[in-house]
Amino acid sequence: MGNSSKLHRLQPMTAALVGVLFFFAIIGVFGLRLAIAGLAVFVLGAVAVYAAFPTQGAES
Amino acid sequence: MKLNPSLLARIQFAFTVSFHIIFPTMSIGLASFLAVIEALWLKTKKPVYLEIYKFWLSIFAMGFGIGVVTGIVLSFEFGLGFARFAQMAGPAIGPLIALEVLTAFFLEAGFLGIMLFGLHRVGPKLHFFATCMVAIGTLLSASWILSANSWMQTPAGVAIHDGHLTVLSWRHVLVNPSWLYRLPHMLTAAYLTASFMVAGVGAWYLLKGKHQHFARRTLTLGTAFGTVLIAGQVFIGDILYGTMLKYQPSKMQAAEGFWETQSQSPAPYYWFIVPDQDNQRNRFQLGIPYLGSIWLTHSLEGRVQGLRNTPRDLQPRMGLVFYAFRIMYGLAMVMFAVGVASLWLRFRGKLFSSRWFLWILVFMTPSGIIATLAGWYVAETGRQPWVIYGILRTVDAVSPVPAQALLSTLIAFVCVYAVFITAFLVFSFRIIRRGPDEVPPYAEASGSVKNAFRPYVLDSPERLVNSNITLRS
Image 1: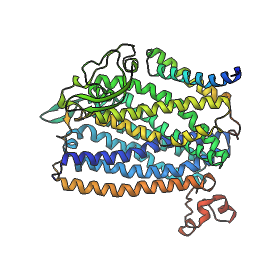
Image 2: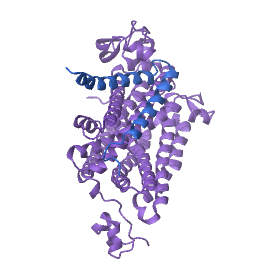
Image 3: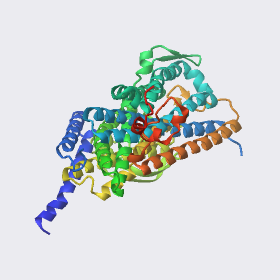
Image 4: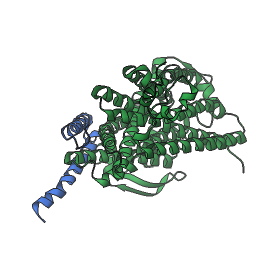
């Protein structure tokens, strides 16, 4: 298996792990402060992704 | 067979209120969505936003209509099935419901006509104002109703003398301990419902290769709003969980599926149980080790309180609360996963071309409605055996009405509501099948009944102008 193939498989797994981590943080597993911080980072990250990566055809 | 009036009254109210909540949930979410879309249209002048507005306005209007009609029924049912509740709670609940009608409903009803029929009559900015007023009206409506229902969950600001309730503090009745958390939880649920509906329809068009431009824009809006909102919702949900654990521990004990006064350490998180309420144990249970301690106590070895902490005669039915909670929470997790996946696909530039993801969005179209219904089942079945928590039991709240009367009206409600839901689904699917290009945008008031029935009045106001029929009187 080539390196690029390994990397290709690793990327979605990393995204899923980051998602799980955010979920645990937001529901307060690591405390209220980290829950608020996790929520803020997730929301800002989501807005940044949608703003920075306009998918072809979505804009008119 | 001997019919039980108490059970029939509860089944009837459960049926009618479950049916009703579907439509306000949609209309609260869609009203705000429409306000955002119209604002985007006014700001950018991009025609696609007007197309989206027109498309969803039709579905919003149908849902709004059914929501109003089925909501009125509930007020009458207080008298029909729960007269003793109405008699006792009237001094606290009555003014809240009256205020909902006076403020929210009048606001919605007053501006709904302009929203539906007025774009080409009042101008875009005034029309946008009308859309905002309708959206604010839905928020106010939710606020009053949630205040009333939250007061039933966590009553405050009242005193009881000889079975009669007196309001001591309206501030405490309105801003009762659970309202501050339940209101944003419900509003976010409504916005999530609209987001996943919008994204699902957009995904369907992309899968079918139709209305690409409209579909891409709606899918972008739906997934973007949905992703941000679900993160907020799980945060609010966790805070609400802590609040209800403090004020209604029996509800949360039932929701977690533990019977023991203290669970084992570490506690598992149960996903499937077969509860035996009579023997106060689970016949079967299946869960993930450690996860109960981590999620519920935020530690690796924490113990969870079980339902035996509550006296038997004050316990809710564990099965109902547990599975309603699992459906709501399970769907929230799936929504969160969909949100993360949408971000990933957006980042990779594959949001519109990943068919597996588009199919997931299509299946998730009603997820907000199902999760909201499940959430309300947690709230209402978890409060049992009380109708006003700690004050009035449900069995003591039922009207002295013959069971036959309750059964016959229940059958009538089922028949009439079956017509409602069939009509709503048929017309909604028809609108979706036709697509945004062919949606009748506005039923223009032409001042003439004859003109109003001409097909092009519904289809294109511009054609009216071209055919020398005046739009403005």
